[in-house]
Amino acid sequence: MSQLGDYFFCGVGGSGMTPLALIIQARGGRVEGSDRALDQGRNAERFDFLRARGVLLHPQDGSGVRRVGQIFVSSTAVEETVRDVQAARRIGAVVTTRARLLAELFNGAALGVGVAGTSGKSTTVGMIGWILHSAGKSPTIMNGADMKNFVSVDSPFASAMIGEGEAFVSEVDESDGSIAFFEPRVAVVNNISLDHKSLDELRSLFRGFIAKAETVVLNLDNAETAALLPDLRPGQAITYSLAAAQAHLLASSPVRSLSGIRFLVKARDSGEVVEVNLKVPGLHNVANALAAL
Image (cartoon, rainbow, N blue to C red; front, side, top):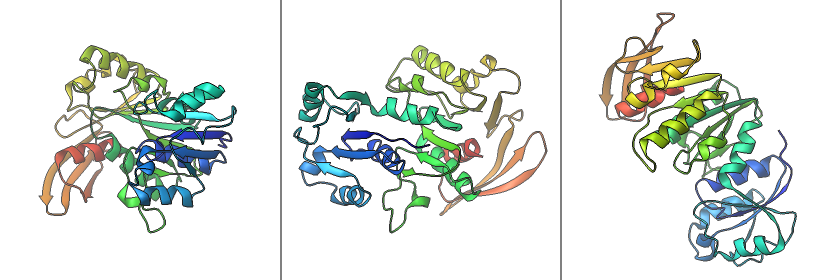
């Protein structure tokens, strides 16, 4: 999908802003930006990386925001007192948020895979992205952290991958309520626990998220996530667990090592059993891998 336009990212060096800027730039958009870390002489390698990919960088003093046609992108970390924000308001530029722009891109994809939950989102997005990449599906991946499997000499910061396939895999955040903007074809919910919002608010947000999806991937080992099952249509859910025999994918016999963890996965419907070797440790990563599988 081409995403032509004229964008200015305020805080372009942020972990959530950099990958989004790179996706827009790769799709033919004009991308400029600023960052207080740039002005302070910090994170030089990241800003050199952005420049090398055609992103024009400015001081965060309002000088880069000069065209009414620019779409000004900010995040919750950017205050109204920042001079770039004031410049955008003054000239009448369209102002949007990182979350809304990401949701617009995600919802426009043929196969949006949204990964939500209190913890494990970045890891699970990286795992799903790597599986699809290895399968030759050329996914676009939007993550809030660098994915080590995609890091290379040419791409030392790999929080985004721009692919040609129909899949768009993204982290989806409930902390600011922006999960409500996303319309996933596949919705993954790792876990739900008290964080940022009350449990009642979280339950409502996650129910709304999964209601839009064709397929919902749920962790039966988390009570709040398992409680979403009754809201789903027959055949809509794919479940995973380290303990519940009724799960579609069941992990067993974990063996820890210095390099990671090894375990067996049984598919309930076919009876097939395979061994998985992870290069990251912990039962929480077994759960993340099950979600990705």
